[in-house]
Image (tube, rainbow, N blue to C red; front, side):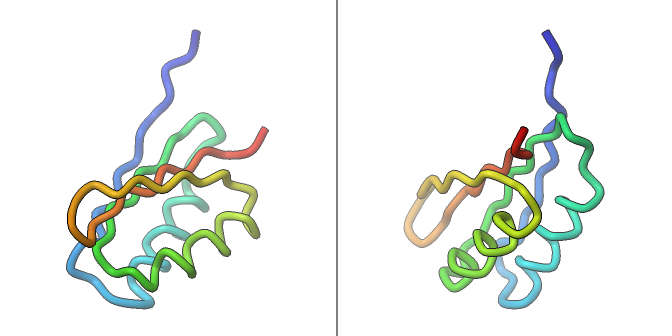
Length: 78
């Protein structure tokens, strides 16, 4: 069993385009076994980041972690 490497991107307090840019940078540098966790508190990023995930071949799940805070978990499609 392979342990997946977790890359955390904390974009809380940032507004567009920073959360998107940080997420895309993490996707581009991650190896195929990495999981990326993106922490955001800027709701418009819930529209921009999923679009780029689909374009770059990543699956995405969204979890609300607090009032106006979310954790996006990105996993490379196999």
